[in-house]
Image 1 (cartoon, chains in turn blue, red):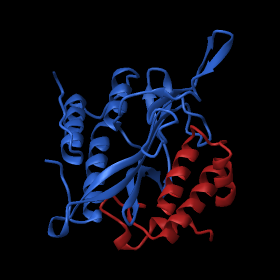
Image 2 (tube, each protein chain N blue to C red):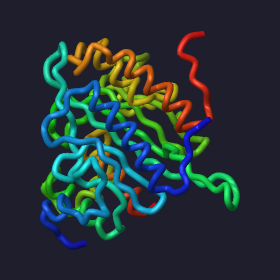
Image 3 (cartoon, chains in turn red, blue):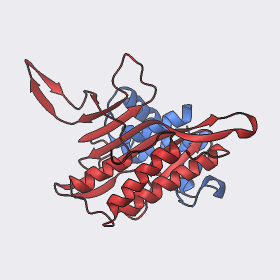
Image 4 (cartoon, rainbow over the protein chains, first blue to last red):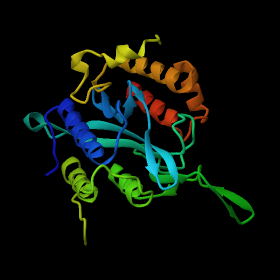
Length: 199
Length: 78
């Protein structure tokens, strides 16, 4: 059963605790950097912050220092009626960015994005951008602006990419188990879906 | 939109914090406005109005500053 709470505040706190503990357990975070959720009524924003301002996390990769930023806009949606009224956290937008530097104006190397309110005649709601261009036909395909369709991407998937492909040193050798457990928890506790790790 | 010192947000009232500490928990829309102002000044060195204008012109697409400002504006207007 998905986890639901009796009010938005408790639903948000549970979501924040789940995400913060998962990220902190596998990814080294500099002193003063936290993954925090701020909310106004039934809406919230999750991101890395330092001193109250959005920030990125430096990563030691096999290609040198890169940076990671996360943004998730979430809402607590009401379900049920009267005495069975409950709240569940739902993602309205995500942006996960692999950045070349800590410069807040630097364009991401790769970014995974989702917007729930994307109109049907626009891009795929889940997509990614790559800061590269390809010569195609008589022109150039600018992948930084093209919306390349993707599946639903979790923070855990991005962390897996960092550890496996970019060889970012995790905080623990148990990162595969932690990410797997977190992915499962996300699907089974925060959504109504069921997660199938293996077919 | 009034400018506030960064430590005013860091030392938000206890009811606006969780055990995770800084800038966490339930805020008022005025507090979000203040965070937008501090964010614009800290990340871009400009006012919130100028930062949001740059966001609307697409100049911050794919950047850390653009992502955080877009989220905060969404929170303010949600």
